Length: 636
Ligand SMILES: Nc1ncnc2c1ncn2[C@@H]1O[C@H](COP(=O)(O)OP(=O)(O)OP(=O)(O)O)[C@@H](O)[C@H]1O
Image 1 (cartoon, rainbow, N blue to C red):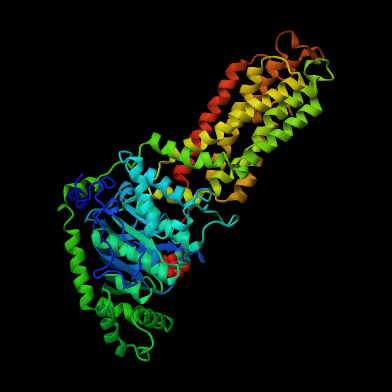
Image 2: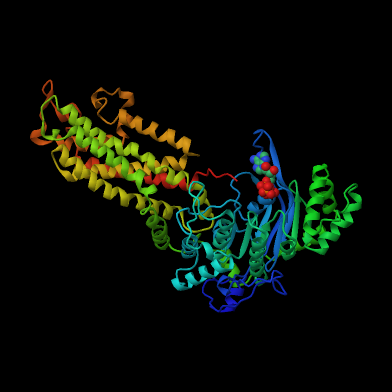
């Protein structure tokens, strides 16, 4: 691929001439020795983003009957090779606008038009070619900084790019974002201290950059950073912008240096635009000219540039004069010029180069294929989890403890077929299928607590839902397989159970798998841990009633029998009973009725019922997939 391809937006990652660029004209005034530049590995051709008359309405969270408009008639544009600042006091609608532009809103109603290179973007395009750095960090706590960036590079850069080049790209990011010092530090979490907040912010920026976006959105990229580091980070972004990418960042209190890096600025107050135009002297002049009509708001001699503009507009807002400023802008020449540029850009919908046309029409939401993404998830996440006591503990400890209880409580009773021992054996077999169902609770946090990360990675186009689910299941099934072989062996021989070990093991293994995927389904449907923790045991307890032990099938009232037919535990308990008591072990039990007839398992097909249990697994898997794909709890 040639540099020309990059300029025209061809897939990046395969250009390797290290063209140091970056730093605004004249270089960084910081005079640093550390590199503040990224090579051509990171270059993309940006594209214009145009938005016209955006009005975003949501149901008021304080009063559900009321609708409120968080954005009102917001128009403007972001240009390639430019860095645009979204400014305004807290709550003015900056993040809302960024979310609307990047297609990240999941609730509310958006009116108006958002166009990328004049065209309405598809969700696939947004996932593949835009980057979004969130205000809140969503990182994998178990990975180190270097691993986190490599993991993203492997999922977001083309599979055709050799691993060494991905590594080189990550090394560059570590250098430029001043993350070298913590490259091997675990990211950590609130519970386990890892990297600092400012370092986490820079890792998030690195994640967005590693995928070579054509348009980069950043929500408060400098919050939590000291002013020196903030200036460094913004210099890197400015460099990328000057080379082609479209960059838009919300920003609160920029340092004068950072403020000076922005080419254009949009200032919002209460969801309305009060300024959209060039940054710097033009913006200052605009507000200085407005000052006389804002009685009582004079320029504070001690404050300059951004600080003064933010102070002025915030004070006007507090004094209830936000609408005056918005009205003044609406009547201004700036607004007329912006509107005509918006129209011009929207009219260029079909005037596209080949690469942009191809990117806009992209059908796949991920860069890498299913198998590669699966391999990467297993390589980074599962490999770490398998070494973590925190992960393995809840998955092994309960099975170990209960196996010891089975051994000590039911030692050697399996070959005693006297009538007074049969209920003991039946109870033991019943508990053997109940415990994995209850144990499913330990798989719930894997989905619920990881949700913000999953949503962010999905939005970033790292993998598809099916890949995530298959990776998670493979991880759990690996442990379940080992667990089932070890603990089924301990219990089967210790209790001296009869029949085939294969059936005893298979039923346990399949029930464990059903428990895992059932937990995933409930976790994906539940909005939080509290709901999931209440719903899962409630459902499992219901299954117990109808599994064939607590009440015989023959005694279940007719109107409840349907539930027995869809009770997965019945299809687990039945084969275990048949395995234990078939043939000449099907001895008379009560009133001359044989054991299997008493429990209504006489006529069942042992392997047929195991097959039905496997079918339950498939159904739960499908439900988990649909819930993960379509149930949206993260509302923004
Ligand atoms: N459903 C809702 N009901 C009521 N108010 C809402 C709702 N959703 C968002 N808001 C309000 O909308 C406003 C805009 O929020 P937004 O996050 O866009 O502001 P912001 O300018 O990015 O603020 P900050 O700088 O503090 O991040 C806020 O005042 C927020 O409380």
